[in-house]
Image (cartoon, rainbow, N blue to C red; front, side, top):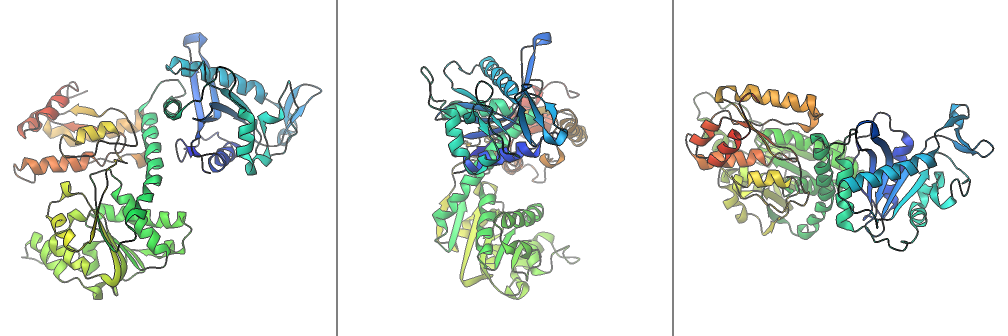
Length: 522
């Protein structure tokens, strides 16, 4: 049993205790996977001098039952029955806040917060529990704290049983929460700031959590084609091709096979090195230490051009395009890589020319495997047409695991992006109108504003721009570039552009959206 955390990997607040994190981990590891585990919930209801605030250390949303609020106390906790107070041994037996009073108040605020958000709560089972995961504690009993409402240090090995005991049976008039309501409440609780209002970063975190949940389940797709040795996996942007590429490389590397994970994009190649190493570490595989960019290594991650040992500026007087697309691949052979590979995995395979596809095929061992992941809509060199000549099975991905519905809808205007976005909604796409000569500078300002005012951290921010039209009027290629750039955004997309230039290129709908965003200085 594995509970489902929302988000999958919480960003713990600086003041969160190890006890809170331990209880969250127990819940994730010990509860049924239908139970949504939501940590660090801050709520405010009402306004002005009548506002009430509360923080829930953990909220458990059970579609088959109801809602359970958990108050966590760290350290060695005891109840002084003589004085009717709670104490912590580590603080010199100093008095601490009554956890029972806290959790009951939090439950009350939660009920009001959900009602304010339009969630029907009259028939929802709303239970509470006090947890002391760092110590053993004898429950004081009713009317203070019944044994069934206490989870102490022993709960780690029997949390599911204790959870069922705390929930009890549904009482007269109560109805099961249901999956849809549980999911909605989880998003509401993760989308509230401490002031009780939605903020962009909260919406982004909600969507990122869903991406991670579905990404984990998406790895099961490998089972559908791993029995075959030569497979072409097609999918629109956001359907999880890169996740599957890394996973397939990791699975075979962990079995001791010599593996090549390659692509044409330099930036992507750099990211894949860390992604594959991290995945192998998650699997506990010693192959994580063997991940290298050295073409002669055991687990190689590389830009395919670097495999030749001649990557760099073309010789003087040689046409650059001919050098990269024709001369470099024609010289690639197993001699450059210290031999053949048991498994070759190509991500963004549509970026490769036909000659590169032919060259890569020579690196696959006689009894080896070759998996290629491609999006034909981004195919600039017609490589997707050549791949079926080398790969025996084609597999189509249909679900969008990356983009929010808002981003997918925008990108769909420039390419056929899969709109069945299983990771759900995100913030609306934003548009900023700027004169052409100020687009780059204004984009930097927008990025800084997101960081400063909306708490978007550096690691969650990427900037892509088309600062000129390299295709000299080939607007279908410009549309393809916009499609590729837009679908790289997972949760929040901000489009900065000159409406007049955009309209001149023929993208009138996008120009109208930019003009509707307000004045250029906005």
